[in-house]
Length: 503
View 1: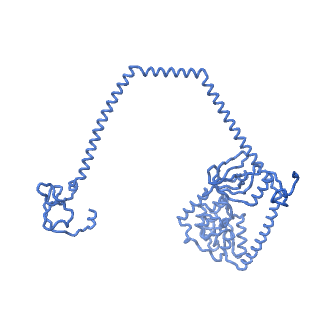
View 2: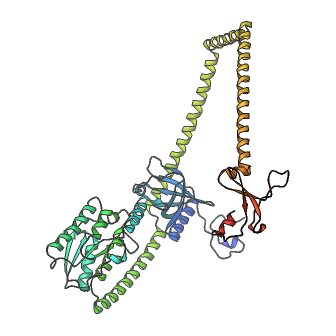
View 3: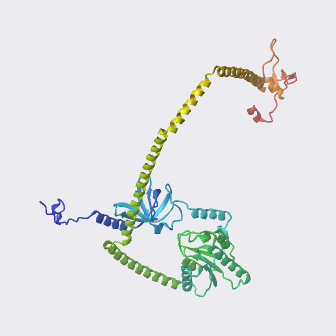
């Protein structure tokens, strides 16, 4: 017999010298969960939403599917509270999350942290509609774009005084062009106050330009740091776009990151991918400063990359050794939600069966009651009375008389209808015969040209071609009022050669 204690895989054919490692199902699932999360990281998945469940815990459970496969998904309450639409079965959605494994059942799943409708959302649709309307008005035309001053002495910045954008702008301007005067026109760049404050700042700049052109800024930078589409939405409002278009000095739009586009980017005289890039585009280049900046940026990026790589390696080692309590808590919470859903389904099914059984007993009780029997006998007696009344000879004779009168009236109507139909057919035939008659053409002002009729004939041969007659030949011209005798003099030139083709 083999020893039950741990042994080497010498006991297993084909694997000599390797120790056998025995895992429990929970250990295997936990290690598979860590492997999946480390390998995939954050992914985006698009599919059709189905089997959507929202238990009392507030967590969401649903399935994403396409034509060939499906994947289970879980989105916990602290994440789904920020979703701006109501998910429903059948919606095409885009989900961001981490690939994981539900240890309790060994089920592959996607733990979602963001979900949005696939394709054009409401904000994106509003963006495209406003963009199309302003483009039709010509606000995006290159011909109206103004060049930036090459060496601005005075710049205005319209942004939040507490955001990262103002710090980036001032930092870059201080390095590249420290002689320039910078004026901050503070405005909220997000929320309900953003639109009125942004338009007020641009209007203030316009008044300054009118009152003191020499001291007013020569250039304005409008922008903010990155964010979601909702965070940047103030720069997609029509009022802000029109205020930018009406600004008396060139405007540099620097909203969000390089991949973010807003309506002000299209209306402004120049679009910068970031606030820092706007400061660089608005000021002249300094070669030494630029080379120093590049060298320091490379060194900083290298140090940061090396530090991040070292930290990532340390985190990877720690994650392999220690499982985060939050994952255990999520698994337990998901298990509780699953049990709650099963309990609800079983309770609902049991209640439905009880209600159906109670309804059947009530129907049987009503059918067996004396009142129900009395009602059935009363209805049967009434039916017998109605049958007796129907076989009464007086009623039968009256019904037969009424039937004869009705048949007489129908016969008279059929006779009159038949005569009317024959009159209409006769009139239609006469009209068709008149249309087919050659004399009908004559009545409309035309003439039929024929040779004199042979003895005993009413009409002569019809002349169709001028080449068929000779000069001096006598012909008859039949008109609406009679017949004329005419003599042929010879052919003449046709003023409308196309008329022959039409004839």
